[in-house]
Image (cartoon, rainbow over all chains, first blue to last red; front, side, top):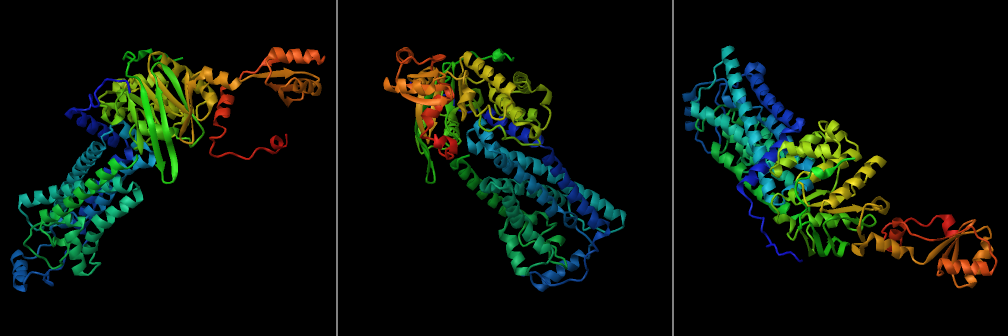
Length: 301
Length: 323
């Protein structure tokens, strides 16, 4: 080598560089019509489910107090049910479509990453920004932000329209205080956003769209689905909703205290407190991102 | 056809690629076996070799996409990963089909431009240069390979880089496109840029490349100027046309030449100059129509060089074997 230039003379990257990278990834996202359409479909699906259940598609849940959950004495359980009366529906029920919308968002998040591998576009991306961890960070931020906005529109719309429809039909809705309602809506948006980032990280690890979508559905949606459909033994679903990323559905729990006849997430029962459940998903996501960053830096593109 | 003189940056003295002792294996396959060469500014350097010789792998290592087991690759004296806004240092085209099919060509260039802090005006400039203006708002998935190559060239030019590195840019181009590409590459080199172009077909680089790096089985077989390579491959050969082929071959063989018939009325003579060939024929009273000093094409020179380095080769055709 005959050059006299110092080894990394141009290296100190400015903060503006990362903003440029975010701009590039955002441009990538918004210029694929199918991905944008996917996010709109996710909103429509979640709102649609909400309207369906409040519009009479689902009969109001039973009014008799059923079995008490493990860890709650029958006295507590009975008094909780009595003190709350027998509301037909909760806002959690109106968000029953979250799992379906989440699947759509997970597919888009997968494609946002795996399409680059499928087409070999990842090489163009990494040639344009060789610091690979920053590429992953930019992609995660973009898909997370897009999914959050999607979730906010979906959850807000579902609660608003479904509650309106229920009132219109003369059905009572379990009243919750506005901070709780806000937490349920923003929490649902956060659940969708973090689940999208989790899926993106999985896609960066396995680099295949089919496998990624399968993993996302099995870990995030399936345990929740099992519990609302009463498909598994109570002990198993309870355990799954504590340790899998699906624990984050607890953010939809209207209040931690009250307890209804049907002990399922559909009526607002989760084994973990709202933010504790959400923290489980965040933990998995951080793990997946760390592994994805490690592999992305280590593997040949 | 197109004048790339719009490019704003003056030729940079940093327009070099230096590759030193690259080694890499994929499992049990040795892809790069100590590749060393450098690409100087102001020239088109051809990077040729049979398929599987290690050309694309070398380019990926230069761009920091693949890690080499040993050796270094620097662009303008620096490792690629340390470059800020790398597309303003090196414009590269590895695979023209690496596109999101539903994204329009313009939007493909737009995200690339954004990643380097460039705006849409620069996108429109490069689109004009490669002659894609009419198709630029169509999804890139519908592009022919030739159009994708032009789009890839546009992407490589976005950052107005002093170094251009293109992997098989002639693939899938129609004859008009090939002529355009040749002129374009020459014009870019004339501006002082280092232009590094790979091809598995030597004929594509005829009249384009000034310098050649020939690789086979992960090794550099030749690192030479095109002129020298052709001179070396032409050797001491003379082509002869004569109606009396048998007599001519006997006369020349007696004079110490190695002769072979190439056509009913043509003979290839090795080991005698044109003058001595004429003298030997005249002495034996053999008539002939034409004697010319053989000048090898680039293709022949290349075949000569890579004869032992071709990885996959068909058995010789029956007629050739019988000869």
